[in-house]
Structure formats: C-alpha cells, structure tokens
Length: 288
Ligand code: HEM
Image 1 (cartoon, helix red, strand yellow):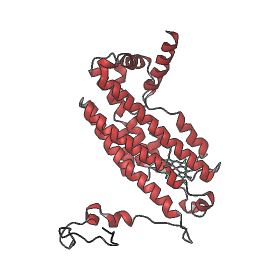
Image 2 (tube, protein in one colour; image 1 turned 135 degrees about the vertical axis):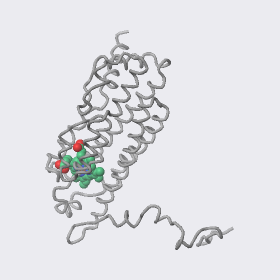
Image 3 (cartoon, protein in one colour; image 1 turned 90 degrees about the horizontal axis):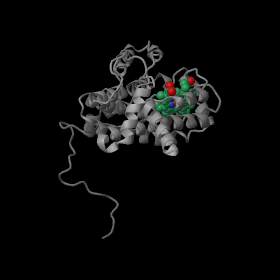
Image 4 (cartoon, helix red, strand yellow; image 1 turned 120 degrees about the vertical axis):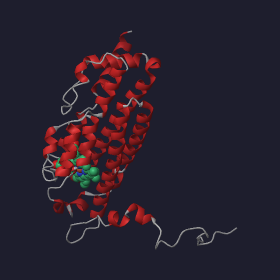
C-alpha cells in the first residue's frame, strides 16, 4: 500500500550493454552532448542556455526540412493526403519552436552582456538550415547564398534548393494538373526567383474557396499552407520580441540594425494568393 522510495529494476530489463546497443549508442549522445562549447572567460552561467536554445532550434529545423522536402515530393506525385500528414507534423514542430522562446526570454540584458562579445560576428542570420526552410517555402533570395562562401557544403545545398520548385510551386503545379486554369508561366519558370503575386492564380484559389465541396482536398491544403505561414510569422514575431527584451535598440552580432531588420521580415509572405483571396471574399460578402 505504501510508496517505497526506490523502484526495483524488473527482471527482463536490459542492464548489460557491453555487447548490446544502448540508448546513448543509438543516439550518439556522446557527440551530441559534447557539442556545447561556451567561450566566455571567465565562464558565464547563462551561456549554456544560449547555446542549447540555438542547437535545439537547429535540430528542429533539420526535421522541418526533412518533412517539407518529403511533402514537396508527395505533392509532385499527386499524393495529397500523405503530403498533408507531413505538414501536420511541421505545424507541431513550429508550435514547439515558437513556445521555446519563453525559455530564452528568461535571459536578462545583463546576463547576455556577460558573453555577447564572445559571439563576435556569429548570428542566426548565418543559419543555413533556416535559409533552406525559407527557400523551400518559396522565399528565394540569391543574395542569401553568398553569405555561405565560407561553407561550400551549405552553399551547395542552398544553391540547389534555390533552383528547385518550392512547396508552393508544387502545389500550384498540382492545381494545374487538376485542370484548374493556372497560368502556364507559373508552372514552368525560373525557380530561383521568388513567386510573384498573380491575379489569375488568385481567381483560381478563389474558385476553390467558393466551392469547397468540389475541391475539398486542395481547399484543405490551402488552409494548411496558411497555418504554416501563420506559424512561421509567430516564430519570427517571438524572435523579434525576445531580441527586443534582451538587446533593445542595439545592433545585431551579424551587423544588422537588429529589431528594425527583424521587423521587416514580418511583411514577407510565402503564399500571397492565399491571403489575397481572403480580402476578396470578405469584400464580396460585404457587397452582397
Ligand atoms: C539573445 C538571443 C538572440 C538575439 C539577441 C538575436 C538577435 C538577432 C538579430 C539582431 C538578428 C538579425 C541579424 C543580426 O544582425 O545578427 C537575428 C537573426 C536571426 N536569428 Fe537571432 N537572436 C537570438 C537568438 C536566436 C535563436 C535562439 C535562434 C534560433 C535558431 C535565432 C535565429 C535567427 C535567425 C534564423 C535569424 C535570421 C532571420 C532573418 O533573416 O530574417 N536567433 N537574430
């Protein structure tokens, strides 16, 4: 009846890992847990938080990329239901990434100031995985590739993604294969350029929203993409507000104006027609 202070290890539980694979072996924990190298001298208690927050974000970016690449392939193969399953996972990862800012928000300006100079010119701006996620979603920018002159492997990865269709490009191509009147120039173009807002495509999207029953799976996909973009903006916003409470109006370690630079990113959109159509439907509802 009483609770004992120790839980005995059951008979069948594996204890001898001299010839069996352990948890640490499978996860290569020695590598993972020896990759934190605080630089501040004298050592500063809060630098480990800063490193772990970045490293965990990068691990989640890795999984987001894996899922988005797969979702893009599935769209190309007209396997919409499977693609939506991938996007559902991405949305949960985004929520985790956004919620995670609250941990870093416990870092005060004075605590950050104790190790900030040791970061020198390093900045999240140089995160090639973040840039890859942006490229995959359609925010193509050849200038960003040049930031990686020092890292040929990362540069090659970004260069390839720059020239490939984005997730949205593949969705547009799928709509065309469904027989919807998508302009030909959106289905075959220079993929290294970002998608430009297109009125005819907005009309196509509007026809989906006006008759969801006949277009249910693509209608659902439109909403999933809007969720994805919303979530991306929530992450950007929490980054901005966390940065603001830690460095205020100071410049970034990457050399930008800091908060004003980050604020400009909130004006970017990956899927312009999915937002344009909302205004159109709202306006038409008002006039009818
Ligand atoms: C004390 C914490 C942080 C501060 C003060 C900070 C500050 C900044 C600033 C000022 C920039 C603009 C570029 C620059 O001048 O450096 C930036 C960009 C960026 N940061 Fe952070 N950051 C922090 C934490 C993080 C974390 C934990 C991540 C997670 C990976 C991150 C990811 C990024 C990314 C991806 C960009 C590029 C954004 C874009 O190009 O729109 N940052 N950060």
